[in-house]
Amino acid sequence: MGIFDKFKRKKAEESSKEEINEKFSENAAQTAEAPSDEEKRPSLLERLGSAQPIFTDHESDIQFQEEYEAELKEQSFYKLKEGLRKTKDGFMSKVEQVLNSFTKIDEDFFDELEETLILSDIGAETSADICDKLRAEVKKTGTTEPAEVKQMLKNIISEMLSGDNSLKLDTKPSVIMVIGVNGAGKTTTIGKMAANFKAGGKKVIVAAADTFRAAAIDQLNVWTDRAGVEIVKHSEGSDPAAVIFDAISAAKARGADIVLCDTAGRLHNKKNLMEELKKIARVISRELPEASVETLLVLDATTGQNAVSQAQLFSETADITGIVLTKLDGTAKGGIIIPIKNELGLSVKLVGVGEKIDDLQPFVPEDYVNALFDD
Image (cartoon, rainbow, N blue to C red):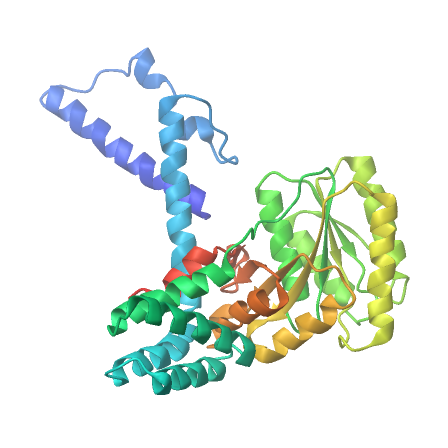
């Protein structure tokens, strides 16, 4: 049962209780009369049914939508907070220790803080940038209070992560090319994305262009069957660009909204793989010159600074538009989001905080920082 169904059931139960209490208060001694025409009219929840919520301009519908979206947002934040628990317990507990162990904010404090940030997978360059900005803020305000310094640190990291993290899917069809090394969670990410797009009313076609790895096509087939979306595939060892071409042709013919492209995930330093990615990009550009194209690099959060190195190497060949950071719930190295944005200028657009399909969610910088810093 999805969150929308749970929400509907909750509202329906509340409505049912109110109706029962009202009926008994009117005439507890009499047998209930047959319902009137007004009572027979389907409620908002019944009218919505099990379909994707589509709201009119009626005040009650708008109120329901606002409540539904607020509950979705609250649940997403809770999942992110739980997914970042190991990072918070590791990274933030060390920062808190530094803040509380110094009676004055001096160079020794900044040296200790910078070392702590580096050891927390923030990286040397970004750690130095953070401390330089924090040093300037402390000098300007003259504060010596740990709580105020912590708030300054939070603001600095928030500013570093600011920007547009949304997926750009403005055309029909739009294309999402998913790249990354084997083991990062590429196939799983594509499967979850396909299921979420389908649940949102989008028609999705998946291109199984990882034709080099044994069983890659079969694994993707399982995910597409589960999501209920179409897959375009060739035999193992086929030309990946040919698979993409056929998927785009199918999307045009069938009026698909999104083409999700899997790609080979051999080591990122293999020249032939990088050349293959360039070839696929050329096919997309030629066949859909006006289309919105997202190139998402899937990175495994558990690899820490190695993920930043992968991003640097991939960005030399592919026009990366965003990052999908997987396995965030299984590591204390979730701080790598900060150097990815600060040093490479790449926005994290999706994060994986669990195994379920809806555990792949849009990355909201404000929620990320609040989950790390708030008690």
